[in-house]
Image (cartoon, rainbow, N blue to C red; front, side, top):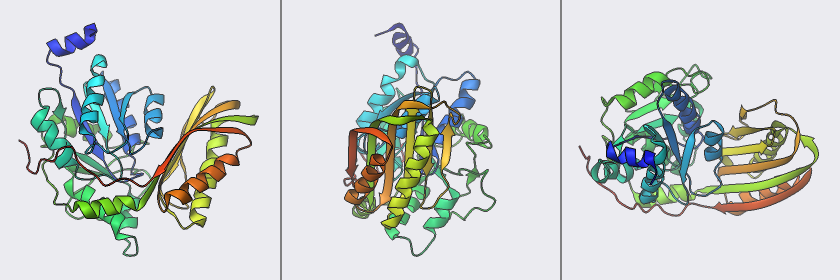
Length: 362
């Protein structure tokens, strides 16, 4: 045990876990990065725990590329791997973060009963718990109000909104109109401009909003069927280009090619992310719907390089085999030598919470 860990125990150190949920592509990770910068400017030590059904996470690499200490829970959602969340948060204690953002899987719900209440009940001596914030992309919200959309995904979206302590529209700098969200009064945030984030942080860290104030009534069989409609792909690859190119020049055509291939198969894209890292810099590109304009972050003017490391995460409504075939074809089209180090492609297993508390712990 090092000196800082001993000091943390001696002083009864209790970081605040700030849980953040929201549907795939809602902007959870971008919000964490923007909020962390504000807190760091205030002299607050910050860390994050990212969560995914598979490994090789774009989000973890993106957070770390922004100089934020990060842990991760993979192989299942927080509710099914609560002990892993506790372990990941405790593993950060040596750094003594005062705030730990915990980003839930984008298809996950019932966080209050399976994560927040157990934290309050069994781990109050180790962690404070902030209110559960669910973030919403206005365009995704508008899509889920379409009566022709598959009701399974709308079910997940609606349940996330229903259990939230706070609901925030993200990407508020891009939109002037926002669809109604029944039963809540949403806030408006922009990770790009920073608008609204400082006020949101002040509220979630102030203690004036009770954390996990609601318990969902939820049919777990329906929940499992809805998640199983999604195909999940996480991939890691090493690329040696035939000619030097910047990360943006690799990530851009790759994500555009995958989007076109999936659209041709009539697969609905929920979230598609590519992160390219070279010795000269990094770029993250993502889209949240078919035909959507890619969002690009990173060092866009990085110098060309031959060696590249690619992480690719895709979440689509369609078959895992079809998704894998589309991604493999686009990777093979990169001009150079591509070595796929790992590729996971599957539909999520039925959620099985480690612990579910069906009342609000006060």
